[in-house]
Image (cartoon, rainbow, N blue to C red; front, side, top):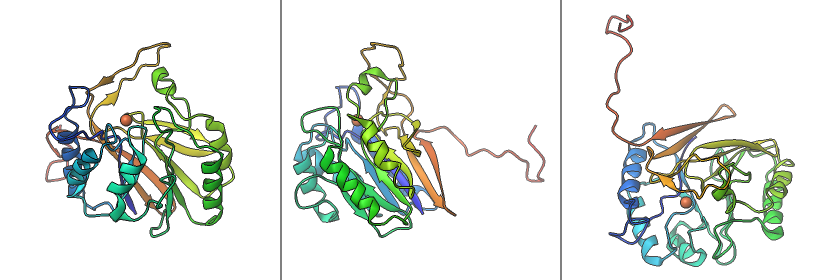
Length: 271
Ligand SMILES: [Fe+2]
């Protein structure tokens, strides 16, 4: 099973740039083209939050138009820039969000079970899994203890060392880690929010954050840094589930030439 992960596209209304600088729509369109051209084609796409920038219905309309070339199922979760009710309405046709309440759900249709979480605190940049959401997670994982499972959540459940992002991180991540520790079937936790690739281990499981197809959060581990973004090469991830192992690749989006051969046609190394 092949899973493409796109995160944090921050789509605005048509014609608007993010932070007056980043053409997030053009950058998502480029990412969508690359994902649509992947061979073998991904079975599903997971979209791990900050799908739009201000949570406006018109932004979701724009997002859906940009995602239209992707014909495989797209499983989305909200990030801090999303707005629950506008997102629920925009994704209604996909039928996985509950009719009310948190935008969390489980999908049992694939070799890897998908458990999608909602870490949003309305109006805030940080996230949380409150007692109600953690209980739902624990219950949902317990209901299929033998199904290899992938968890999706926007806010990563660990401090990254990038101070200004940790200030808007997940509250009380240890509580999530202790739920995770009880469910050995979880293969990985896929996150967004950080706009760059970061790995950590939480509750004995692998957790990764994915780059954005648009702007990246600067790699700045200095204390008290005001933070900011850079137009580093954008990206997405491809996760391959095969023979009981989940392998995660980061793909860089851009024009780099090639693909060039290592060998001459006679099989000798090009010197
Ligand atoms: Fe974001």
